[in-house]
Length: 511
Image (cartoon, rainbow, N blue to C red; front, side):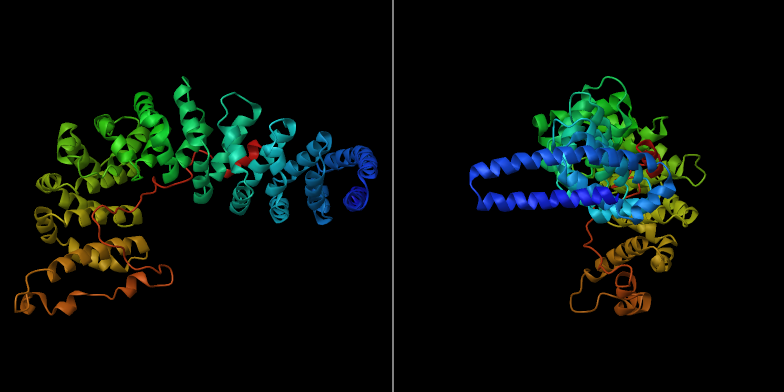
């Protein structure tokens, strides 16, 4: 290690002398000195190759790796990558970094030395083969750290990686590049940077052209990329919208739950994707009762995201016999898994936005069914949050509002305003405040519209101060405007990690 460090110092000194000579001497003297410099570097590369080969063999022992790290081997290897161009030397340096990157202490040191910025010339070089493959695997091991993922994005590595991942030809680097891009796309900012490339539409095109089973890493990458509004808009404009329609058809025809998950993420955005799915709403609704639970979950979630005013959910629920299915799914004695029950609650909340559908839900006694489900699932914060959102939607309609107020649920919701979950408290307050706003906006001609004997003084109706819910240490925000189309996201939505890869598996695959 001492020899390698000294040789790197000598090379730095030679480079400094060469730069000084370029400014002070004529062209002939500079060319002679430059030729001599290249000869010295070439001879020095041979020495570095032997030294790195020896260190690579010694680093098989973790104890020896620890001693090397203490002596600053990682900083030396990064300097070799930055200053050297000989492929054998780069291969040895990258191989050693890749081997060391599976240990947390070494990974933290590489983060400190900003390895991501050092390998940019290698990733951007289309002629690199072995060095490129090693570099991608090194970045793959490091990409489980959120800070390093940010460094990768800041180092302008996303465009060349996206180009490798979306390549039409099958190359040794394509699969690793897709896995790496999947890791990077977990974070919102790097995910949005992909919209500056053509990667997302090209990846979708590859899915459509693949007649067999879609590779797992490609499906996972599509799911993450679909969370970006910019990527969704890019796909919507690609090939005049035909690519998006073909993807929907492919997912429904093959009943691929992963493709449907990507379609569901696309249905979140207000950029026109929801309107593009209107012709397929019948196909989506007919698959909500599919025997494939994973596929059914995505179909129900996609349908729940289509909260467009021009959809007659009253007709949709009756046409595809979803009213009976929803009642069975929301029953406290249902045998369906909780994930499908949660999706059924989401779909009920979307359907309740329609006035005619709300009357249908009231006629079928959905208010009492949801109250029973709320009591049974009161320990599940997310389920409680979504059920209260359904109550919030039902409160906009006279029939269902009267049914709801005739139960003990309002008092139960007021008690739950002190729930430890901030989102649950927010939903409880939204429902309670919607009733308060309706009362104060009532007729007030001359006299006070409240009968204090029945309701008490109006000031007493605000049982709790807003600050009690929204201005604590954990949740420093005021409640949003009360729009009926606002719905909190479930755990199946806006998740950049679909769950098909775990960190341990990926690190094991590429160590």
